[in-house]
Length: 316
Image (tube, rainbow, N blue to C red):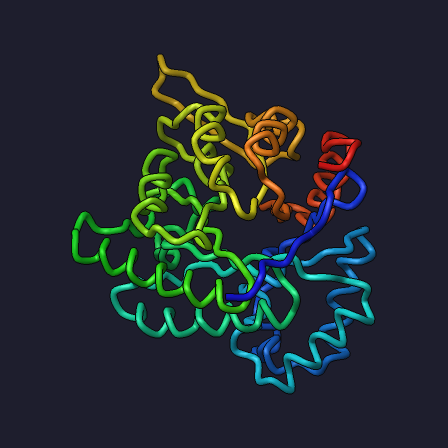
């Protein structure tokens, strides 16, 4: 077992706050793949990130699948990061569930490769989820979360496969000195606070915890758990944290719920309270800034500045 990378004492000035790459796709307008771009093209994209003021990056695999880079190409990417002045505290995956009914075993192998690539990049965390691909119906609407997507089955055998696979990944992560943060997402085994805690307890490996991406849940057009209760339950298990916020309007008399992405400080979740509570429970991981709609990178930069204002002044 390799020692987990330690960020050292953290305060508002040095807490790792990464830009997620959800605004960028893997397939370029000409049909080519970011995987095959020369290093100079990667650097041109990452100039957006540094121009927005970020010094940390989460190379989310909707943009670049670092787990699928050859050793030589991964070294090229590391060189681009160095030249750009960026570090990678965490690597996130999306819609590559190890219990996908068609590609689950393939994705399990892929997750192992992501763990090794994350360690090579100096990351502390990798983020995995159990949510499936967008459905055709979700692809047709403005906001995909307004339409129900793929659900984890109520099948003990499938749940057991998820637990066993993530325990296997947890052992691998421990061997290379990273941890695993499971992303909370609706209609998965980690789709509620209590359910997420129970699932991590089933996995029962110290390297496996949570990414309490509460934005995924409060944006739903259905009844939701109180956000503060979700923070209270998940904070002790939080390894890495995707942060985003939504405006939420409810009119019970009309059975109406509307949500929209907004900057962290203006949405339903009070992140001043949420981060303080998580830190009180021992959270010392990185943040990953995400935002859907408009200039998501610039909103993420605004969110980074907000986090800098509310995080502790003194090292913790």
